[in-house]
Image: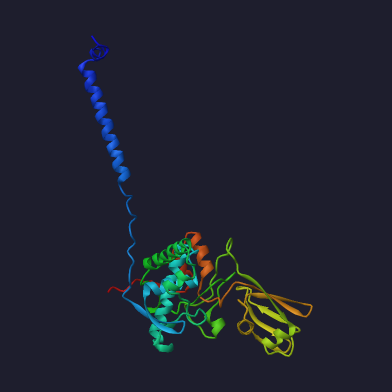
Length: 330
């Protein structure tokens, strides 16, 4: 009897059946694993990009263009706030920007060159970039373009979540003014422009702890400062400061007295929240915050968002006596 025959006789039929089952199982597992390796990874779900039926005419860098509201508001966020802000702060800014634009459309339609409703100058209306322009500002590299795409879609998603919501006072959309930062308190519309707007009042702004407080120093020679404010000299400078807001309400320079708002306009400094000192023929001005101080404080909105406030909370804090109106049904 050969050794092979002896070997085979040493195992029972049950042993052979078990062995065969193991082989078949191993083959099945290999085939299954091979199939997995050959299967393409599932694509991530695509985002449904909403195109608003509402459009606005924008004077953009001298050219009048019509934009759907989603692209317009995303372009506004790109300039006025940016993708580094939290989602709730961006949504609050989007609703404020929409309300501001709608106020312009309702109250002064076609009031710009070419019949545009608004312009893209932050100094006059509100800043705005088109999507191609935003991408072009990030460079041509793959990494830069990928970052631009991610940033734009993040801001666009924030817009889509609040599309059509507006801020109203007594049933009318408001002039939803906003600014970069107020270190202590916002200011009333009346304190800057001389007449009262009930929903644009001075309100407290959260301490900008852990967030850039926008400090800036300006140096003027005494002759430069005197020339800027049309004074005979730059001696005997006296400031009158509002203790509630930290902003200069009036300033006297030699024989000239003006409001802090006028002084900011004439000198080009960032804020009416400032102090100054004189040394060696120069005047040193130290500002805190940035902007006119009216309405929504963007950096205050970010602090509130980080502390858990919703976009509704933020808007209801910075605009007095208002309501949030839901989108109109089509």
